[in-house]
Image (tube, rainbow, N blue to C red; front, side, top):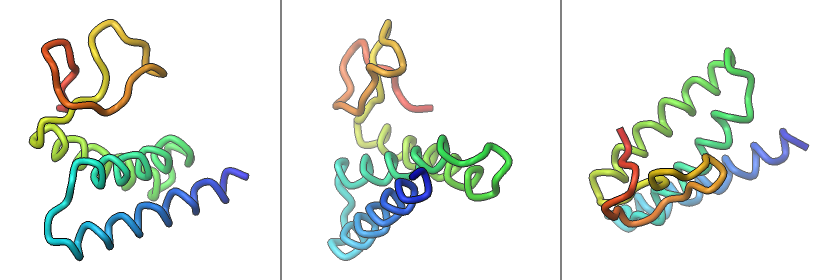
Length: 96
């Protein structure tokens, strides 16, 4: 089941990447979809798996790019399960 989920997330990431590249400009929503796909791989594979390490690094890079575009992940005092991507506000947590 996990393998099927990972493949589905990877497929979504590839489709989104292809669409974004074809349009010439990548939207925040496209980057969020990429981030979510990489996050799924990062968290779903064993920590010592090279694919997991690469996915975590890609996720971080995409997060920084989203931050430059004014997107934040979560707000102060939220639990991790409550956090989601949104346009940055005063109490938002900015990507590092």
